[in-house]
Length: 111
Image (cartoon, rainbow, N blue to C red; front, side):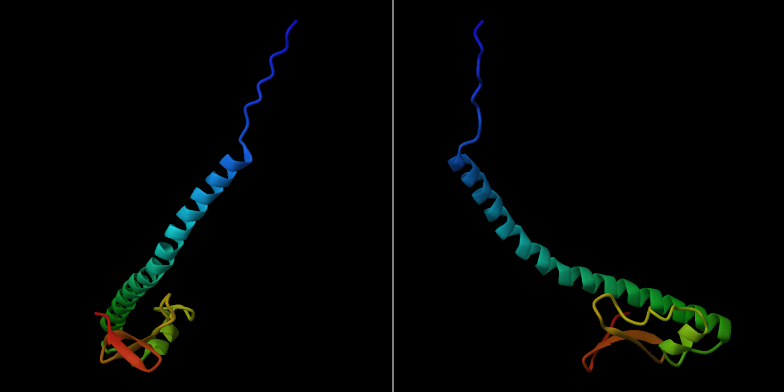
């Protein structure tokens, strides 16, 4: 009886080529992922500002006045205490019924 041995396996050179290809793909994709992270946070902040603006309008309808600041919305239970900043770290402020963000002393309207 003859036993057939199949000696099919990857050689060291083939494994190194596969690792090289995987490394090149990672080097290409990682910078793209980190570049889009800022865009994702910006879009999340814009959506959050619109949600807070809707809460300001609901407060105006029920109380017949505009809220003075974000703390007024928190006290009236329109927002949770941990909902006063955007996902990217910018603070939410309310001026004359308009919601905007502030970060490091600079303000930007998001309406």
